[in-house]
Image (cartoon, rainbow, N blue to C red; front, side, top):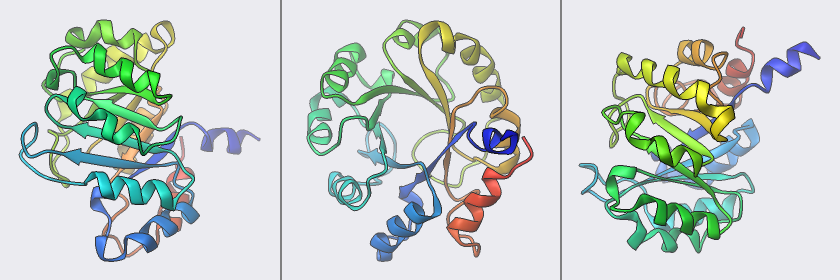
Length: 227
């Protein structure tokens, strides 16, 4: 019983921008069967971040290909203008994150997400302080903390972001949100931050994709970390 409880402490999300797009159907099926908790969808517009990643059609396909929840991370300017395009193709209970800096009135966009039956979230860049998003912590249910600058996979962990978790985690219960990790997620980071109260981790090229180990084996090893 104690071993099972330990395995349930954190969620694992697959960063689908790192998947093999020549075999996307196989990727979704393999990750689903391997026990991934949700599929993380990075949408980039080439303006808010200097890169283009996944598209609305990529998200639509993955939404149809799995019953698991989707975590849609909108790295776009003025998400209020386009968020409905994404909400129209999601299921109630899916998560949508926005970056507060990308919108004049982020609470308006978050309300659209709530009204559509989705889980509202904000993503916090390494250079964004907790203090500047404090009021929004009462609105959202999830806070995605970026441990790398957004826009590209395979970046180095920015160690000063660890202090941001120390500020956010004590506020979770009072303000009703959960904290998630995105970027350069290694087994050591999970072992360190899951016991501190981080709810889930986005897995990319550091731990999950581009390896010789099968997804099921990698996920099993993560679940069995000595935490």
